[in-house]
Image (cartoon, rainbow, N blue to C red; front, side, top):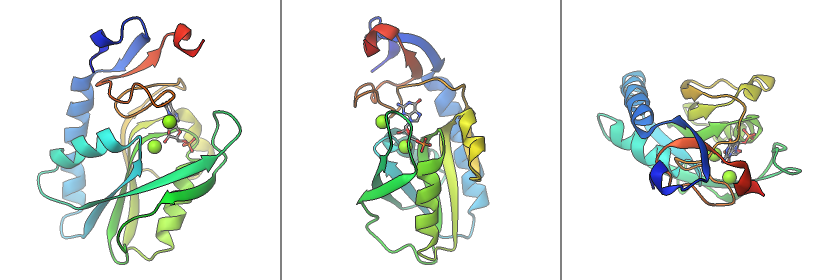
Length: 183
Ligand code: 5GP
Ligand code: MG
Ligand code: MG
């Protein structure tokens, strides 16, 4: 779905499809270079990372396997608490693998910090994080993020895998919603 299919639901486009693809190509080149000679495994977190995973993996100039996790984060309202439950675990053992977590967005970073610690306890060779979007609040937790697509302001965004009430994930760009959508 393109922005012209959004009617008046879209308030503003933050990142166009072209900007996102161009940045993902750069990240993919860098990742491929950094992981040369390593046993790279891409790990996506459902469902938001579906679109970024699909495009990032195809931008890699070589092949790498992927695996998926689904978690639910208990929180009051819209903010995550960092208390996490695994809904779907990885299919395979990651012992000795060089794990790269692929994420759509890091806001507080609490969920990801839990996932990272959980994966690290399984004795992989390394765990790093790649996120398309990062919000300013993440500085409150000490979580090193090796690959960042874009730093964005503290606004609620949708598109490119990101939802509002499970909708708008299929929008090709990233944008903010008009106030009437929330009403
Ligand atoms: P954190 O634990 O970093 O606060 O939560 C990250 C998760 O919250 C993301 O994976 C995503 O599901 C959701 N999230 C955070 N910010 C946004 C946003 O601006 N838009 C959408 N759609 N989801 C967000
Ligand atoms: Mg996510
Ligand atoms: Mg969501």
